[in-house]
Image (cartoon, rainbow, N blue to C red; front, side):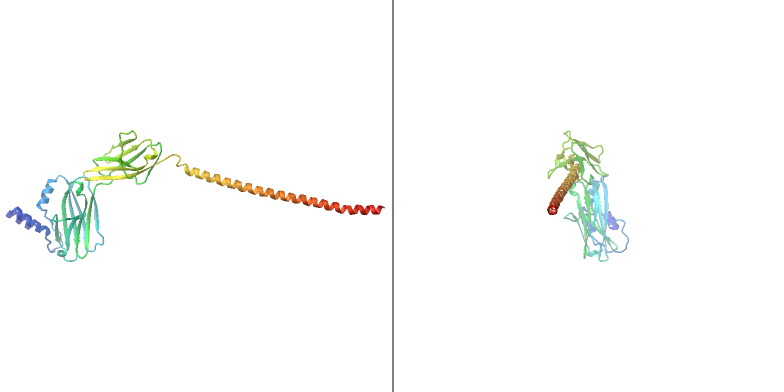
Length: 330
């Protein structure tokens, strides 16, 4: 390929012929002759060279994915971009079959990319490369390379803006207190920060002109929202949103505002249970004492009746004796 490029430069072909030959080089897949990768496996088309020169001040993002005919799952690679960059994506596919029988395609999300990528082969490995420049949010997304043999193999590069980090668990505070919500962006500097509050489905920008809110952006990669004199209606979802050159990123923080009576509810519940238990015990004791009193009164009544019965029996026994004594005396 290098020799062919030198020949083209010596003969100084017309631009139309040069473009035709470059397209042929982009779609050619030479048979494997040795197992070592060539020094310059790809030749960048003139259009791509012009674009790369135009944005030569951008940093270069170079990423690779390796696939084989035995790969069981698609391979994905997540790439974080904060600012416009030149991008070089390379996929390599190793197979024991015929490389000329492998169909190579590229897609951005669901859109087929035509004639914007290069293909080359070395040994038993097929290489494909896609070079482009990301300058706006529309170019972000997923770029996938496909190798169609008996089984399709897929590698995907996912481009996204940096993620924000807040508090994963709900933040709990109390009525009348103040609280601070914090959002951070690791190793990145957003162009702008914005806070939103939603107590339902609608997000409302936080009004810094109110004395209730104070936004602190001492550090470029961090923002803090201070809420003073909390009310119960201040609870809900808060969103911090960071603006980058290539898009936006946001993070969610949940705030729960409680009244001071809420922590006492378990205590009140325990006190109520204790009072109820004591009342039940007192009622049981009172009922038991009442039954015992009735039982004692019943026994006392029986004893009195028994004594009366015994007294009456004694009087009746004495009457015949007196009569008998009287008759004897006579």
